[in-house]
Image 1 (cartoon, helix red, strand yellow):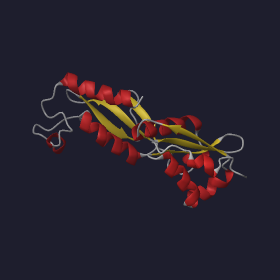
Image 2 (tube, one colour):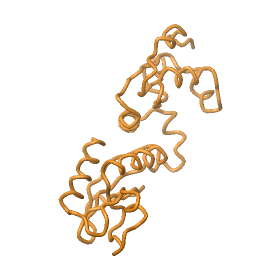
Image 3 (cartoon, helix red, strand yellow):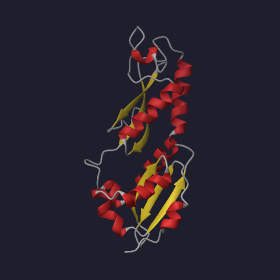
Image 4 (cartoon, helix red, strand yellow):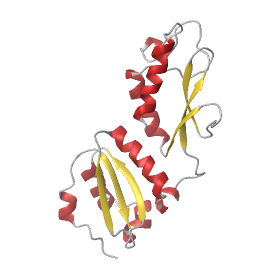
Length: 190
């Protein structure tokens, strides 16, 4: 099958973060990916053909590009589109098909954020699913610098390592501020 996306069109792809979707001739999604640099990443699929690409690249008929404002936006959009469109070659490589979720749970006196594969839908707010644990952890490290949050149900009486890095509210935090930080993180992932 001939790809309807020419090298000239690839050259015109912007060098910005975003999501790309490869479609087959029936316009069913084959593969969805995210990139820090869309032009470089899409081009890379054609230049460095690995085992994964060899399974679907010959079936690719069209590529759709969706630029985003940031890598975080690209990560969130990719997860949302994979969940919605269920592209064959994204789902195929998930070993146990367990996605990552974020939970906002009530701890002893304050809420905290937890990364999990098995969310507690009854006793927490759940954000997700996310396809890449590595990308999600990287995003959370970045967000934690802006919105410090707890990751355990009970904080030690003394400052933890995260407190020393100014990435944890500390043992005597303002409850309103902790809740506001988690609300901001929740809004970012919506």
